[in-house]
Length: 376
Image (cartoon, rainbow, N blue to C red):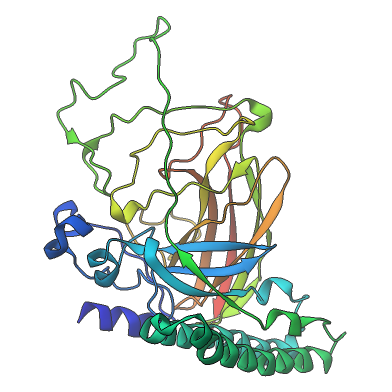
C-alpha cells in the first residue's frame, strides 16, 4: 500500500523525501529479508526507481533518491547493485535558455522524456533477462524512436521563437547500465587536546547509545573525522544556473559546478551508511564523496524554517567525475508541490554525508543556496 501511494505521489509531482525514523524498521538487508519494508513515500524517483541514471559529459550520473533507501525487491535480492536501468543523455542540460513563449511546450516534452525512460525501465525489469538482442530491439530501439520525435518537438518549439537548437537528435540513443553504490577504503586518526579544555573527543563517557550508521538522533558518533586536505584542495561548489520562477509541479533544472570534490564515494544512508565512514582523500589530496540537492518551501522569509520538516525534493549525486578543475552536473527537479518561495540548496558530502572539513575555520564550506518563486 505504501509503495503504491508513494509511486502515485511522485507521478503527481509531489516529491517529498522522508527521513528514516526507526533503525529497527529500516535496518533492511539481504541477510534479513523478513525485515525488508517499503521505502517511505516519495523516497523513489518518478517511475518508482531508487536510483536514476543519466548520461552527462561522457559518464553515468547516478542520483540516489531518498539517500539510498532500497525497495523491497532490491532489499530481498541483495541490494541495488544488481539493478539494470536505462541511462539516457540529459536533454535539459543541453538546451539553451528557453524563451518564455516556448517554455510550456518544452517543459511538457521534457516531462514526456522522463515518462518514456520510466516505461523503458519497466519493460527492462519485466523482460530484460531475454537477452541483449531483445533489449536492443524491444526496449532501446523503440525508446530511441520516441525520443527522436520528442526531441524534434522541442527543437521546433524553440525554433519558432528563437534560434533553433542544433544536434538534439544525437541525444536520442540510450543504453542499459547497472546502478548501485560504490565500494570502500579506510580511514584516518585523531590526536590530543592541544592544551584546551575539550569536553569530549570520543563516546566513552556519553550517556547516549552508539550511532549505528542509520539516520537517528540522540546517538553518539564514534567514527573518526578522517582526512582533511590543504586549503587549496578543499572542496567548493556553486549553483551556476537556476530559474527565478516556475509553476507548481513544473519540472526545472539546476546546474551545479564542483571543484576539488571527487564524486565517487556514496555509502547509502538509508542502508546504514550515515556517519559510518571516516572522510577520505585521494592520491591528489582531494575529498572523495558526492553532493546533495534539496528544495524546501519556506513558510516565511523572516523566520528560520522548521529543521525537522522534510524537503519537497532531495537527491544525492555521485558520478565518478569531479576533480581539481570545475565541472558541471545537471539536476532535474520534477516539480515542487505548492506555491510560495522555495529554497534550493546544494552541499558537498564526504562518503558518509558529512560536509567536508576545511583546513581553516575561516573558509566557506562547499554549499550554495538559491530561492525560486513557485506560482500557480
